[in-house]
Structures are given as C-alpha cells and as structure tokens.
Image 1 (spheres, helix red, strand yellow):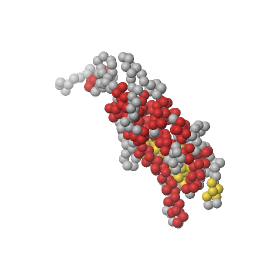
Image 2 (spheres, helix red, strand yellow):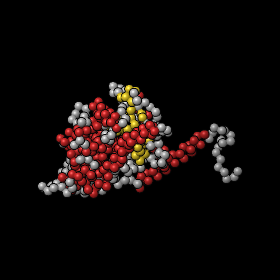
Image 3 (cartoon, one colour):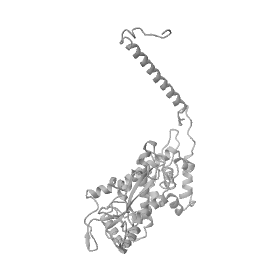
Length: 404
C-alpha cells in the first residue's frame, strides 16, 4: 500500500525486526514512567504541607505564651499569691473526673519524665510546664474534645497534646495496671463470695458482658472488619466487675463485627479458665444440696452454657425459674451499670473515637478503667468495705488516698 511505512525484512525474515520492536516498546515505556514521575512531582509541589518552625524560610511558631496557660490553671484550681482558687475541690472533681489528691499523685509521678519535664529552648525561654500537659490530657479524656480544643486554655499545640495523651495512657497502664487491673486476691474473693451469697447467688465472682466503642477514624481498608450490625465501625470491650463496679478484667480491641461469643474465645480470661489457671478451685459453695468448687460469672443468654457461666433460663416455665431469672438479671446489671459509668464520667468513650490506631484505643480504655477504680476508691474511703479491700503486698486503696 502506498504511503505506508515499511520495515526492511518484515516480510522476508521474521526475526529481523525484533530489535527494532523492542527498542520502540522500551522507549515508550520509559517515556510513560518519566511523565508519571513529572506529574507526581508537580502534585507534590502543589499539596506540600507548610512546615513551621525556626528554620529560615518557614513560618514562625505561634506565640502561645506558655506562662499565661500555667497562670490560668494555678489561678483557677490551686490559687496564687495567697488567694483562694476560683473553683473548689468539688468543681475540680466534676471537671477532671478524679479527686484532686489522685490528680496530684499522678502529677508527682509523671512530672520528671523526659517528655513531661519543663525544658528551655535555644533562646533561653522556658517551655510548657508539666501541669499544662496533664491538664490538657484530662480535658481530652473527661470531655472527649479534640486535641486542638484545649489550645485556648492550656496554650499547647495539637501535636503536643496528642503526644501527651499517648504517653499518659502508656504511663497509666505500665505503672498502675499490675496494681489495679488484675484478678482479685484471696481476701477479695472471700469478700465477693460472701456478699454475693447474701444477695442470693453463692459462688458468684461477678458479672461479665461486652460493649461497643464507635470508631469514627477507622481506615476505609478496615471498615468491613470493624463494622457491626448497626453499620457503625467500632471495637468491642469485654469487662468483668463486682457489685461495686470494681473492674477485675477488661479486654478491648476486638473488631466490632464479632459477637460476644467470638470475643470470649479470644479473651485472656477464657484462656486462663481453659488452662486451669483461673478461677481457683479451693473455694467451695453449696447449691440445692450439691457442693461445687468451680466459681462462676453471671452472663446473659447469648453466651454458651459453660460450667463457669450462669445465664437465665431461656423460657422459664415454673415460678422458681422466673424467680431465678429476676434475681440473676438484677445482679448482672452491675456490669451494665459499669459501662454506663465509664461513658458518663469520661466522655472520650461516650463519643466516637477519633484515634487512628486500635492500640491507642486499647490504652485509652484501660486508662479510663484505672480512673474509674480510683473514683470508686475515693467514694468508698469512709466505708468499711472500701477499707477492707487489700492490694497485693501494698497498702489498701482507701488508705492510699488518705495518705496522698
């Protein structure tokens, strides 16, 4: 055909044009890669973040006036220049969700750690005080507000508050987890069994149930894993508590698409029961003339019929069964009340979580559990039952508050 380009050897020799064809394909591929790289660099130039700092050519730091933030905190809650604080202890406990004695104890434990200690910058100006960082953390946990919401009061940036919350939760879990979030001691087990026997269920160690915490910042790639029946993405929180909502076990982080039974099979408590580590078998109780040594937990009807679970009758027919169901459901409301307390006292769990990773959500859940135990301890300081609660080789919790 006239006007068409022909390559020598195309018809005469099939292998004559192999080198030419390969070179054309390679050149086209290289040109495509170079064009893609050029477009990527152009897009990066357009969407490049605006870095801030003291480096020449970058935007200057925002003048936050750290001393003003510290002055406001001292004036409002501790008093300055011999003047009484603007807000008393009652307002402090309502806003920070912990007694002032507990807050000061945490402050003394954490103020000398690397991130929290007050530093001096290159110009000789003092930076943020550890009290400002701790107040910002409690505002995030108590009110469930975003990290930059407290900037107007504590005069700290969003990144600083975010780091403070992360390090605070790690500190609480590492330093106070073995002391409070642990199985009950023998003396505590005896007290729990005695109280539940008076309530009509001998051999009961507490109540077990699960709750969901919505996750608004769940990545889209993991949305199907963490999406529950209601269409919301969440994680599951499994907890065990006694009559006083004292938390002895909390397991968080399972995807919201799992039901309570599937979460149970992943729980450390279930593994301990299966391997015989828990509960202790040297406690006995008698029911209807039968003596047993396996203590149990109260659960709802969705859990399997295990020997260490006591659930209500699914279809009660006799007056005895209906009476037992009413008693079992009344006592099992302890764990339901616990989840209500967690969300009422710490609004970070009341609202959808804005954190980006599951481990941070788990740390936050355990931190809230610690603070709830401390609040209970403060409320029970004057009661005999609160003073009788021992700790493993340490001072009783109520006495620890009185000594702060």
